Length: 169
Image 1 (cartoon, rainbow, N blue to C red):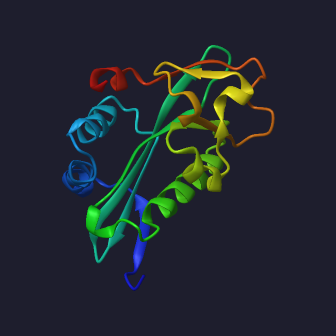
Image 2: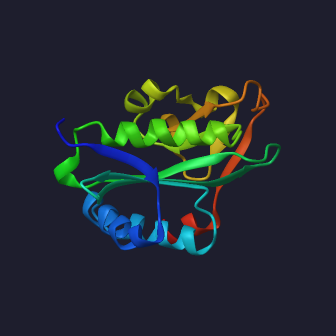
């Protein structure tokens, strides 16, 4: 890849750059505004940036989700990488480092809505297999990784994202 990429937690000087990453990575400003809104609400449990030559080029957010029967799970969303830095494995590094951070915090599970073929490499599988459902009708795109063995009771339940997500549907 050539570039020296660092992955680290966000810091206050990064906020404008994180917003810019999501503006560039997505067709609308919804994801950029979502990250800002989650941060303002104190719900960015894990927020990591990818840095090349001191510049923020990627970002991943993990925020709390609730299920009727389980506490402490996180939702991975959004993840964005500046278009000029896509296809270099930065998103994969952000996800892997975010999951490692989640494990260190003893997070029981992480859910996401995304392409099953892509996220399987990290250990995600269909959330429906453990009886979890999402509010958005994600079907096979709604996936889960159990970070603590037996964390998800097999009757699962409805997973609710942080209320800020509803503002951007």
